[in-house]
Structure formats: C-alpha cells, structure tokens
Image (cartoon, rainbow, N blue to C red):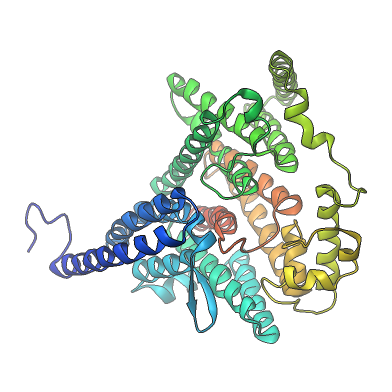
Length: 479
C-alpha cells in the first residue's frame, strides 16, 4: 500500500536502495583512500566523489525506469569518471576493465532487467543490424587475435557502447523524451564550458590563455573539441523553439563555445566547427523557403564572423599565439604532428590489409611499430588519428564495411525524417549538423575506441546515432 510519502517505490525498492547506499558508503571510504594515494591530482578525487554520489541516484531512476533521468545521470556519471578511468582500472581474469564499462553494464541490466529480449528484438532496422554486425565482427577479431588488450577493449568499450545504443534507441517513445535528450546535451555542454572557463580564469594573462590548450573536464583537449562539435549544434533546436528573450543566452553559449574551441588548439576540429555552423546558418535560413535569401544570410554571417574575429585578434596582438599551430602545419616534415597524423592513416590501412578481421580491438599501438609508415616518423603512435582507418586496422575490411553502412543508414534515417515532416525542422537541423561534424571529426581527428582507458568520445558518437534511430523508430517505423 502506498502512503503519501511513498513516491511510487515499494518496500523491495526501499530495501534495495538502502543496501546499495550502505555498500557505497563502505566503497566510498575504500575508494577514496585508494584515490588519495594513487591519483595524481585533486581533480581526480573530486571526479570520483561526484561519480560515487551519482550511483544511488542512478539506481533509483533505473529501478523506476525513468528514461530521461537515467540517461541524464548516466551521461553525467560517465562525464565525471573520464579522468578516473584514465588512471584507475579494474582487473578481471587478466582483462583490464574501465569504471565506465562496469557502470554502463550495471545501469543497463537494472533498467532493462525484465525486457532484455524485447529491447534487442525491437531494434531490427538496417542501421541497428549493421551495428550489431560490427560488434559481432569485433568479437570474432578479438577471439582470433586473442590478446588480453583485445579483450580489454572489446569488453571495456565495444560491449558497453552496444548496451548504451540499445538503451537509448529502445528508450525513446515520446516527443517529451526526444526533447529531454536535447536538454541533457545542453546540460553536458554547459558543464563542460564552465569548467573550460575555470581553466581560462586561472591563466595569468590573455596571451597565456592562447598558448595553453584547455581540456575542460577531459584529460585531452581533442576530446573536449569533439564534445563541442557534438553538442553545440543542439543550441539551434533551442534557438528555433524558445522565446526571443532567451536568444542572448543561446548566443552567449555559442560564442563561448567558439572561443573555447579556439583554445583547444585542435586545427582540424576548429575547421569542422566553423564549417558546421556555416552549414547551420544556411539550413536555418533555407528552412524559410527562400534559397537565394539563405545564401545571402550565410554570406553575411561568414563576413561578419571574419571581421569580428580579425578585430579581436589585432586588438590583442594574438596573431602569433592564436594561429601558431596552423603556422607549424607541415605534412612532409618528419616529427611534425601533421606528418605523424598522415603516417597514422597510412599505418592503419597497412595493418588492416594484412587480415580480413584486422589485428583486434586496441591493437594499433602494438602493431604500428611493425609498419613501413613507422620508419618514416619519430613518434610511437597509439592510434591512426582517423577512426575509420583505426577500425580498418583493428577489425579489418569486414568491420569497416559494417560500420560505414551503419553510418550510411543513420544519415538515410535523418533524410527520411526530414522528408516525412514528422519531426520539427529544428530537430532535423540540429541532428544533421551534429552528425556531419562528428563524422568529419572521426575521419580526421580522433581514432580509437578507447583512449587511456576511457571511451567517452566513442560513447558520445553512439548516443548520437542511437538518438536518430530512436526518433526514426518512433516516428516512422511504428506508424
């Protein structure tokens, strides 16, 4: 029987939550002591404390099957644990598993505990089947190559990504949940921006700001650049749907994101980011039905952006500091980062061409030294710096084919949703810009399933694709 303070939880749920809370209090003491001894900086300890605080909340929302709350808490927990996963690993049967992996599996099984088969069987569309096929190919590649690091990446990155995909794609059942996903993205974006500003405020001068690459919450500026590419387009949906009084808020977030993208000093990501938003302005303008006007508005936007940027750079004499990495760009100079990136691409294709199923997940950094490309550079690369080249090297032509077809169908679903008119134009524009940016980012910037034991960037991409599949499934396949 429910009481007025029952909140919809039965006695069994209360007992479960109580036991979990007691367990995590004990774990917190042990974990915190271990972190104090082993963590390199205080930020890791703060991240771990936030992570442990979120766990009981995740359990409650998962038990009660509150999709939006569970997704929001899960993404926040994954966000908080990226630094911890960098240095803290869990060893199971000689396989190193990340904290992220355990978290995702735990939440997934708790949320979909009584509808596991239904959740998987409901995702029988082509994109989902190709993605599951990619996971299957990765498994066979892992089994054939058989190294511990193959198993670590497969169970620590690929399997959790599949669980996240199923959770998101099968969980979207209403327009409210679609809108909730966008607000979750905005929440993560704002948290990331605030932490980026915190890095900036701690700098002694403006010149220092432009010679220090900021990572925000993440241990790598490249990862932060990818988060900006993924999430900033979500502002367009809010911009087009909310009242004009909120326009200055979205503009401020957009400008701050652009500023922090500069400060990540990722050249490729910056070019992608600028291209995304030129495309965004064009799509918004053309949505009003006048192509010529759309081209004029886009041109004016580009000119104004260039003029404002030029004035800012000249006013503060930032020519050398802001563009020094572009000035150092050299694809033929040995030791130059651009040259090493090209070698990574070459090595990825060389490794993948040796085996139909590749060298196994996580194998690139071990196989790189055996390639002809490695003799032309000075660095020992950990990835191909291109996700598609990395997939080819680690899962072979079979894995690459499945993954490319998966991406193709995600794009096809976006066009089908647009053509059907069953989603808001703002939703289509935001998703399309985000997806285009992420694909370009994965082609020329990022290149691995798991970096330093964290798979958060890969999870973000999978969440994006699952969001499209979930919306497509709700709007078109179930009509």
